[in-house]
Length: 317
Length: 200
Image 1: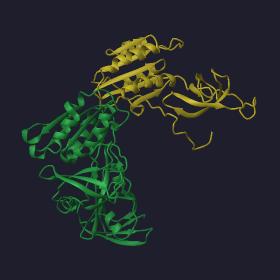
Image 2: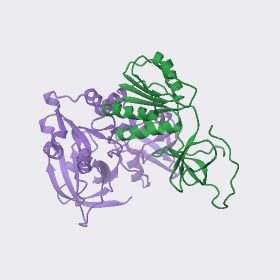
Image 3: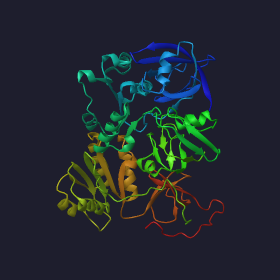
Image 4: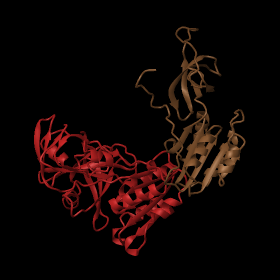
């Protein structure tokens, strides 16, 4: 997979737990064009093992001199965000993938409601620059825990004017989805990025109110969850691989030299889907891509985030 | 017809069924689509506000407006023409909220005429419940002169614009609401296969 070699040009501590990174291409050239809502996957070499985390591009889509990403420090994660916070400095060289967009604004919509919870604000920062440029009708609703966590509030006020609304949990300000969705005119699309329960509640509320499924858009990148180690057999490659507890299947395959497909590495895009030939135990599906029926059938698996509890799992790769 | 072969753009229509989750319902029907509306009310009378726009087909012996006025005690608006339906629909749509469900019944030309009104309001084709009623007649778009000929009943139709003999295909344009038609005797002028009624 082709990569872009970038260098960290600037780092800003935005809140106690969020850092903002500006990346420029090492060879000094402009970076590829991207559309609002795109993300890149950043490769990090942590103690000899390559970690790859997806991050949304935040800056203006009109400016390709630099890419901007924001990283929230996740203490309970496998180390990617902590690495970005503690080890990456101005001048650090990183490898990123070309931008991919799994969260673009629907061109068929007449109005766009953007909802962010916490660090979920990042994909909207670039979407807003697109919406402003196109002159489309939108509202930005941003919920966060407390004033100390109000990342990018000032930028948003400047970008959105009176289109932006803030909800501070510590001040008991609540965003009522039912209230918000009920009053929207025909042709409205809603977009959400935030914690899993928030995304689920929005989907449920929209469904109850009779919103068509294709008017509700969400993006969630899951970090590969930690679990028990297990064995996988790759039928085409004729290999047996041990997936350790702190590794995803995808990472284990990559470390063993298997050229497995991937894009988002967060269970969202479906690119890494593999066929399950047999499994004598239970597959723990952690992705947002497969339907509930597909998950129950157990014929497919997303190796970037899913795991298994079994003696034998045979994959067609 | 080749077995197992189908054109993906050919619309597949359904039966009108009230959607359970809704904040309002809007039913738009013409002519024999009236029967589909009456069938809807055989299912139930929904709790949410309803709007029914209906016009009888003046050329058809089957009329539904009178029966409908008895059955549908609320939200019914009987129109005199297709044009009146679409202009009343426009007015209704300006104040419409998300959660409103749309149902359309009638001949294919009518349904896609209604879709062309709904589309600018951000209502997508896939989210509209459509039932084909009365006739299989097609609208045919001539790929040579760009004229659309309505009410095509035959496998080969004469273009109302350029007079060419058009083979009526299954390829359908949702934007135009018409099937693709191209000249069947372009290679050997005058050599036209048997013309048969296939879309009664």
